[in-house]
Amino acid sequence: MTSEASKRESVTKGISMIEHGMEKPTPFMEFSLDYDPYTLKATEYKICSCARPHMRAFHLAWTSFLMAFIAWFSFAPLGPAIKKTLGLKKSDILWANISSVLSTVFARFAIGPIMDHVGPRLGQAFLLIFAAIPTYFAGLIQNVAGLCIIRGLVGVVGATFVGCQFWCTLMFEKELAGTM
Image (cartoon, rainbow, N blue to C red):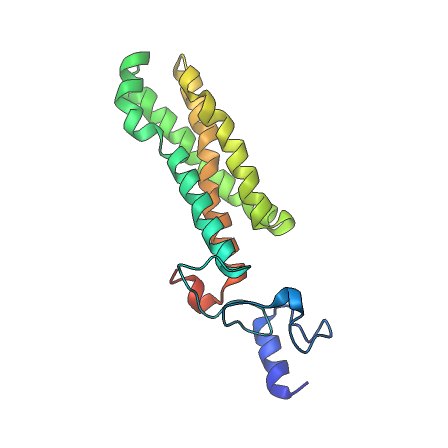
């Protein structure tokens, strides 16, 4: 291994193909995008492509975050109707909003190690499935306590932002991941 390659390897601190005894990609690792041979991260992106694995992961990441965002903010336009139907005060709505924000903050701290352990694909799937259940039952809210609980449980889906960013930084070089 050349000194340039070893320097590059120590800088990236990623798993290189050379460490695994591979001098070139195997047939399963043929990518349609340009990539760094040491980290296997893409160095370009083609927004209209769904090529594996880089662009497919990118599109799944942003699509899953979009679904989460819709569920996460579904209460905002319904706020006046919920307030009127349940006879809530402004302070009741504020408590529901606080429970949503707090659950999002705590979930973002918790999801990082989970993503490290199970990966971004399974982490995102878990968050979306978890949030789908309280979102489905949101129409059954009868009082302030139910609203706060449901808003808190739905707020957990805000942690999909962490998974989306984690997924993209695994697939793309750091200079590219921040521009997508």
